[in-house]
Image 1 (tube, one colour):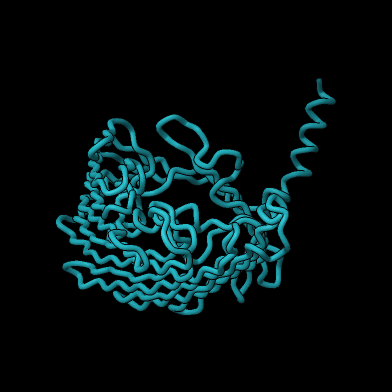
Image 2 (image 1 turned 90 degrees about the vertical axis):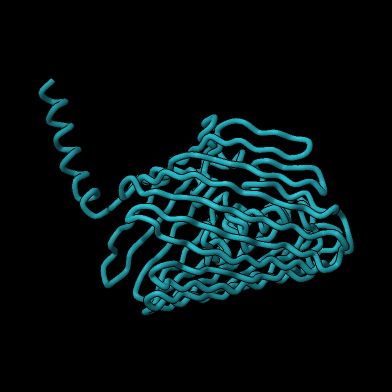
Length: 354
């Protein structure tokens, strides 16, 4: 018994320097609401997860390598809080999984990572499920969106912040899809870049994605986003405009011509009403410029109340109005109508971050 205790003590002493040099943080989001919604053909009643922020649990770590360098990693899994299942089937770390090197130059990392379009969030509706920009871009299948389409596999990414300027860039070699399709290399590679500037109450940014689409046409889609935000004190105004050219496969829009031209714009305000409470109002529109009756409008109103630094209660309503050739849902697809139908959803819930 004594020999076992001595062995355990020696093992603990031997491992102590490792723990002293490595800093690992467990973090996450638990966000759930009661939701009720209606479209012409469908109704929804139940628990809705990730209304303000996607549910997740993650592990983030750093190790000081000396000379101003650090090794960094992130492993992050999303999950559905209503039933406990993984958010993206088949992926152990569906949201992020990367390792990298950090220094005064910024961070260079490898793995499954956010493209710059994930951070294009000049959005009064907080880029959550209630957001018109999030709902319309996800519904149309754009990659500049705060959703899964902006998480890219097999990628090398760079992020650097210098004063008020943040630069991001990514290149993704989608080799898994290429092998599955039996096509030549570089058939569906993609890259993106962004610049964001923040100075006091003013913020602005521009993002560009180049996406090689798979399939018979293998078109090269080009997406551009510009956004800005200004805090006047009594209210904050935020808005954005984005365009996707040569878009072949537009989810949520009935088949039309190839090489489509899609546009999304949104505008909103955040109004503080108490020390802890804010009202959020936002309106957005999706336009397919190559197909008749293919527009969608989405608007949202929400109230958020900070119960503490980490816990926020909220109530919100989101509605989508579709033209005859569009079937985009409310609350970022939580309730999906038939083409040409409208859909609306109300939610009341709470988000806790840790």
